[in-house]
Amino acid sequence: LPERDRADLKRRKLLLEVTLKSYWIRKGSAFSTAVARQETELTPEMIATGSWRQRPFKPYNFSALGLPPACGHLHPLLKVRSQLRQIFLEMG
Image 1: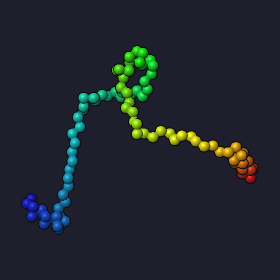
Image 2: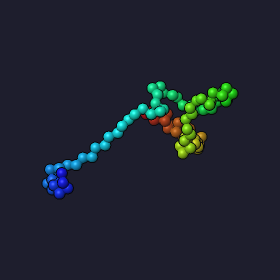
Image 3: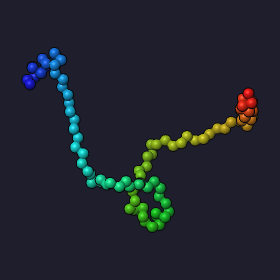
Image 4: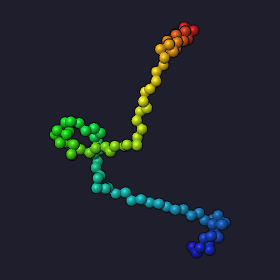
């Protein structure tokens, strides 16, 4: 349609323009039907035998946060007090 007719139909809401996207998916050079498990640790046996050269290793994620450090403990008297409170609550 000419631009003028298309604008007129759009204004009268008789035309709806839709954009279609399509993708072609093909097998790449690294395609495999078997799932290869990546190694996460380098052991002394791997180094001694040289088998680490043929194994795929998982890349390190240096920006990942680790577990939060376990710090701080309750005072022993507070522990006893909370245990007694729990006993009395269970007794009614």
